[in-house]
Length: 183
Length: 315
Image 1 (tube, rainbow over the protein chains, first blue to last red):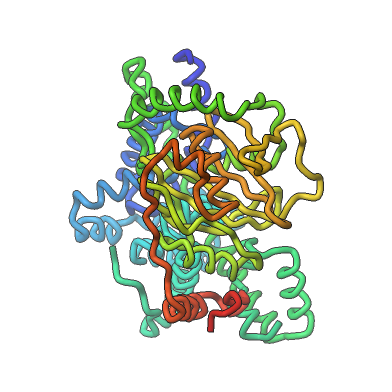
Image 2: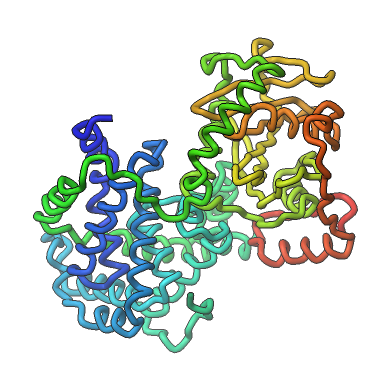
């Protein structure tokens, strides 16, 4: 396969998902700078392994699996505390920069900001599930493949993640939903 | 559908994970139950907010260009970096290629393989799913077990039909587990084996109404098998009562033919025994107590709106 044709295919099958990859990366890493690094590294790894992608229709799930793998590897290198600090330092403006005029009411901004903060504070297994469902738009089965867990675990994590979000949004943080042990 | 059942089904309903029948049951309940309607409306708002929140961020305009620059700097021909979790890929690729060639030459003496154009669509689907399940990463399984009886019992409870898989495996062969899959839009059982580092897939579904093409049909040791090749894979399929079985592997047609005969007869064929004078280790067969525990666990874990029925004989 020629280099040009390979590059063209990579554009069509992988880089077309760049926006979603970045959104997922922001929610995994907690900062836009780390998210950019994560997406760049993911694309580089995907490009190097691109010939092993046999089915273009699986490209989205494939590159998300690589994104997760790169993220987990980096997260292992860093301390958990460092990641949490990044989450706490998030600029609130990141939520509002792309809001349309009709959506820019203070109440809505506050709500979305609370969702953002709560999502980032979720334990990683739940955060991953939410990101794949709402950023990636994957089915339970695809999520199970990416996360390498049974289907029931995907459903359980999604359910609990949403319960935790709901509890946070209604100010009922004290009624914590039981969570699985961390990785 | 009861209210507790509906509450369990809210997430799958909003995530578009229910079958048409289940959706109709949910909607029928909502029409006559205001509390459930309120609950699902509230949950739908949360889903909508989550969707809206995820759309807030856009990557910097320079990110795409920076990625392109980094990709352009990758030396030509460097494409061997393995993606995460590809247990069935290299380093055996070269050895596998050589063995595969030898096996295929030998196999051609046993079974004449038709061209790929002769394959029915559901067999092409088998090839595609075998690739997807075994190449995109570690096979993701609903039930991970090397116990054939446990895996087939689990599948029978989910699918409503019994899968006849060989309980005696060949030397170097082991069951990794199974999952619920689909073939031609119908539910299908999926079992994956590993044999000498090759993944081997077995799909079992109800026989399609269209029947099987005589073009692919071969008779091996009195058994009717259908064989073909697609995308570097060998495919063997056969009928057993009202079910169709389809196996896929890159390991060669002799391997798969032998496996098919094991499924059909529950033992190795005499001819294959002569070709492979190896022992056939017997896998552990769970006793009734083990099966019962398994089903209790499945019942506990399954959502209540999924009817989990153990196979006959399991308490």
